[in-house]
Length: 349
Image 1 (cartoon, rainbow, N blue to C red):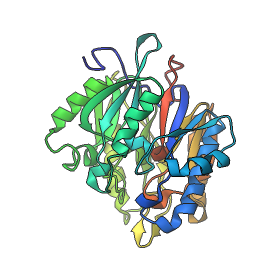
Image 2: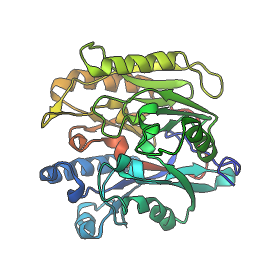
Image 3: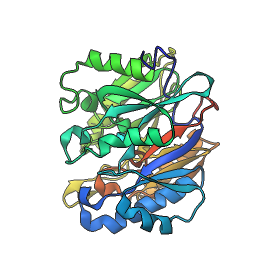
Image 4: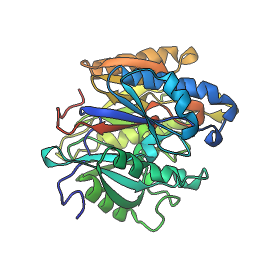
């Protein structure tokens, strides 16, 4: 039987968490290994920020265990020894489901390092089962290559994703769009998929949705927008806006779009950085928001203002968004939430 048949479903990120999982960086897998210490400081800042709101479990390789034991002397931060190749747990960790009477399960997707871009990935492909085993949570194996950053759900039957990623032949070449839709409906128990065409320019994940758009609540979607016609993201985000303003969700509600202006274009070693305020992470009663400083100071303040107006009951906790973005992602990419066993509210607001 599939999760849908057994009445499991994926909760929205704003529902109460039991804890957050995050993996510690691995120097050998980094694009810029010379920045390892700076990236570790970025991860440390994110971990400590999340721990202000909820427990954090840090996935660590054996070589780092002793050092991290000394670094994190906080009862809200624990270590879990699981060997891994890279540190983007949103994409290779389990997707948690919740069933009736407080039961939980975790989907073990297949992982191939974003279309076989980085080798090796065999240890990363085994992280999800080991997390589920460690917490005695039922494992449901799914046949799809899928990354958690490629999808968002509203907890009420609607999923948001991009064609650029999910239909890319480097993931599931034998699957048609209809095949992928059917599988997502069966494994996540959703009824409708809203397809955006592309993610942000320069996103090496092939356009993960968690950089460009996310649900703020059922029927409400935050969208990072660009108002510079000379920027590649101008056309991309305008097309997203066109799609969303003409869409409704699984319950028939017309989508309301909440725009957030993108930060100024920045590059590192000649390569555009994927800067996104939408790569924030919802924690219990808060939001961990990457901000970028310098030329982005004005859009930083705008993003804080929009998010505080959108989520008046959540504390906006900012972190240095430049800390880890050179490696290709940010706060949301590093994290994976374990929902609490019992439901606690259905709205992100």
